Image (tube, rainbow, N blue to C red; front, side, top):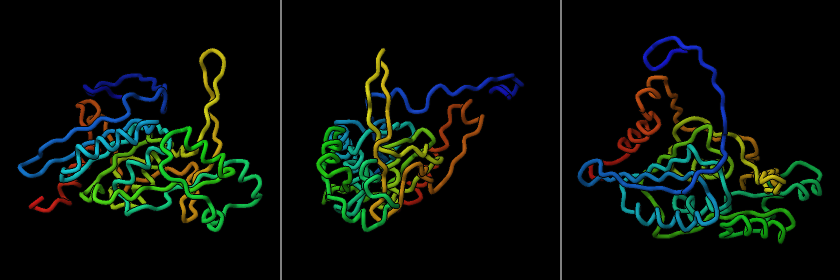
Length: 266
């Protein structure tokens, strides 16, 4: 393998982590004036944890008047259904976003899930904490449809690009699927981790914890999203030169896409 100066080196590559420990804070956002009258918003979300719905509202209020928006979830390791609050800013009104079916429900069903089963799932709205999701699943005997919201005039109607990659996992993939299937956003980067399952954390001795999948995830139209990576609309590969020179080709492509979609008067 060659280093940044082009010299041959014997290199041992070892991946130390995929999604853990989660980054904090979960949300960061900013705005850049690209030219007079054209401001691009940038929202980086590294976790969808309890409280992310409040951060999503704050971010979107600050970025509401931008000409286009980049949402960066490349390092987002997941979280909970709070991702649906952010997603609601880009969808078309209230609708079922994902259906969770727990192991006991699936075992009792005793056959492959059909769309009719998903249509029967009780609707759950604004379950934006881990406790709220768990309570909804218990109350509905292990099966529930979680809805996006109708935010009316708050809906963001300008061009949106979502950056994804192999460290985009779990609830972040749910957000990515929603943005790809239910909005006009363009997804740029590389396929996500393929780790979309609802998990429960069990504490262990010595400060360790064990996360176990407890529910599968389906789209309302019947697609099983378990272990399915989100595919970008535009795949971007990084080169050694990009890494050596601190370039971000995902961001470069995102800006090209946004500027190409903006009208001259934007």
